[in-house]
Image (cartoon, rainbow, N blue to C red; front, side, top):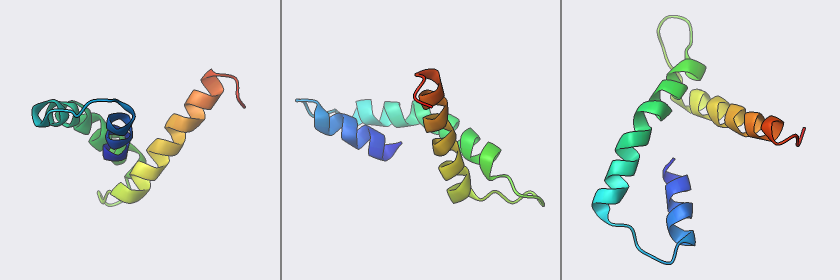
Length: 71
């Protein structure tokens, strides 16, 4: 998420205010956390956040490609 926010900010001809950035992150972090939990859940109650994040991102890209008929 942060990389996406940085890329978005870099592509715009304005600097974002700290409050705006904080609000954006606060709005998106619950979704990101839930995705990491869903896809990184291992048996025994342990969550692998790195794998969960990677799988969630892969699924988002795959779903977008399917929606646009790329694959």
